[in-house]
Length: 573
Image (cartoon, rainbow, N blue to C red; front, side, top):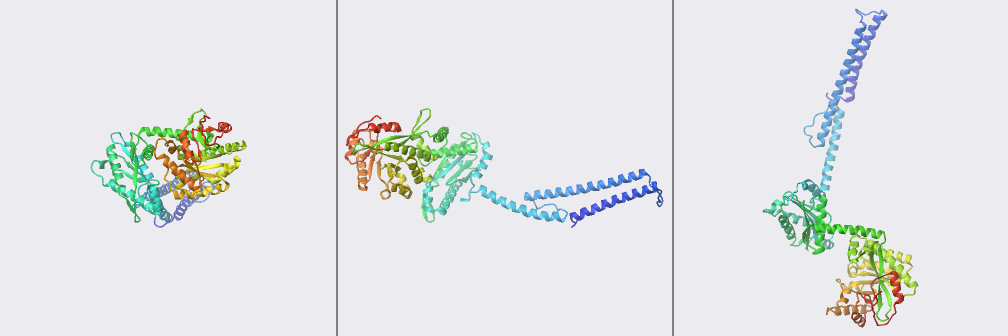
């Protein structure tokens, strides 16, 4: 139809149809006048039936033309739709021509828009499936491959997944800085890729269609759709581990890394993508717990342990919400005066059914989940309220509360302590905070910043389990400590280990030089107490005096205690 436009085309067709209909009406009108009014017609006059036929013919012609035009326009739209479909699938080299200049202009605009959308989509796909740090496939890419191929895994032709984690990467990245750390991560991925590419022989079959992907942080994943056998998977794991035997050279610095992994086989140990990752990560966690580094296959026992852990975590959250944690107090006895001068607050988890959960069971899980922060605040508040009661009854006794590293990291500890002191009405000098030696050494600036305003009010700071960590004496002497607590393992070894007395004497001498008080934990015998007293230890706590007691029992213990200087006794509480 050339360069004709849609309005011109429709106008022309409409005009033709209008002329045709007008002519038919005019002829009918003239025939009526001749027949009924006696008017003149040049030669003849049409009968009524002829007029009807003429009208039917005109209507038929008009309908046929309209139907024809509708079909033509429908065909134009079909062809244009096909054009758009072809353009969207990047198959535009054989696109049909379209009539009308308006549709041609629309085609140009659509073509440009589709091209831009296609380029944007390709960029998004690259972003979605490629790890920006390493240029390797990412978690989404490997999950997509697993979703497609995992249903084909059989016991005779198993699939395998390794979740890999770099050893000591955090320490190396702190030393190198952010940019160099990404370079180290990329180099690690390249080294693994080269190790896999160099494998030959039967093991090569297990690497068919395999994909190595970079995941979050310093983790990688290797998926083997056709792992063939456990022996082949073990050989691959060994090759990956050996690839990290040599150090990396990053920005001129030599960096040594190891690698560990958890391995799961399908369908033996998992049949879905989520289970594969979960079970592989369980195996990796067990490696970290048992040996710190290496490779391990998933076993059903790990799943049972994990389920038990999840159930315990759910119970732990419920216990925090219901305030099931109770505060018990173990007394501290002054060696010189024989008086009870304080107590350590101990967390005890007692379930509604009376079952007691060991701190060795729930404390590590509370640390891992972050619930230790809420538990610590509940214990501190209960301890301060109890210490206020002791004060009101006339007892000059302080209370010591353990503070976990998580509480330092996740809360404004200074504000929390000040708020608890205000609510309980306990004077700040009657509260003592205990932190571990490792915490003091790893974050001395934060410890000093948190304690500075509290110590200005009189709150004391004790270092717990002294001598068990890797002490940096230059740091410890700069921190505002008031008390050294000698770990129970040295006290209990006094009568069996020849080195234990020397270690305790060294700690006591250091504390005396720094002007600090000392507390010996775990004192159970008169001989231990006598040795510590003669060597100048300030205080002791342990079963020789009493086990941890709930608030009412401890208050009764204080009322019944009769101080005897330089004498110890066994109290059953």
